[in-house]
Image (cartoon, rainbow, N blue to C red; front, side, top):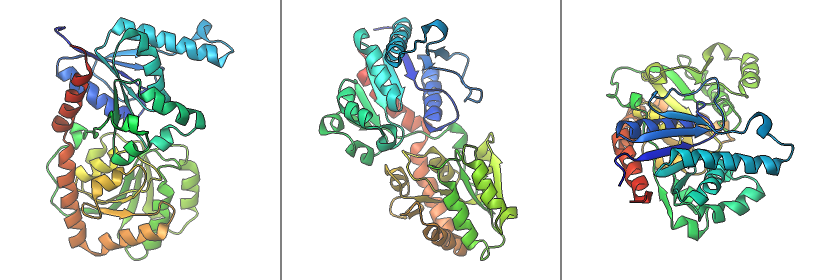
Length: 367
């Protein structure tokens, strides 16, 4: 047995998103446990998560003379380059994240005998949307050493042969969100955190807020994050009656210190895996409300309205408005859900969850 184990993570980038945050959290954990850690991505973007200098970052995309007019040629070149990097890093296990990256990792590692654990971080229907990818996903995943999913609903997407080999491993909380529950009076704010895009669906929350804003004049809405839908949603807000009470805050650092005393958190998404933003808001004791969206992550976190409120439609602002009205008009209900949410989120403390990942990945490594 080698004195030091090596683990390599392969994903699209370290841009600020859920899968990227999970990867960084795991990489830092394994580094602290004495592993040699690599993060391999095709490219590097301007705004990315910070990583410790002891973690080796490797870029694997083809460049310059390597690029050909033929897409098939380029695909083969990318696989060969990734294979060369895997060979040089010599990890004991490769963890790949999201969609076609999983296919690339399996194909690149196959001749090397390095076990690959593929990980689906969103709803599988979203990661494998095209007909071609849905045809490929089951036979490709059968070639992986391990399959990591987030929910039972995600497992049901795959054929039985893959389901039998899949494990459900949750995300861990970011350590910054692990702190004592704030028990003082909470600010009259409704907040959401996430990329501003059509799938995250923050416009549903905006429309729901406008339906109840007249009933609760002391409440304001804060949207943290940026993205392609921001401009059109700001335009709609600015044309409405409650523009002065709806705040687009953009990307902000240390969100845990910005929202930890606020009242309500809403996740209005159309589709999610196991949403980090919802889990983190629960860990801060905000009263959570979420759409009951595929692939079941919010339902697993909130239960049947036990740890927060679920709304069944991601297209009906009236239903979300009713949920908001319920907790804003009943502080005892809001406080009770807040405490239950905090208790549930404590199950995802990083020491517990990261140890689960380590145990599983060790089981895939060769002696």
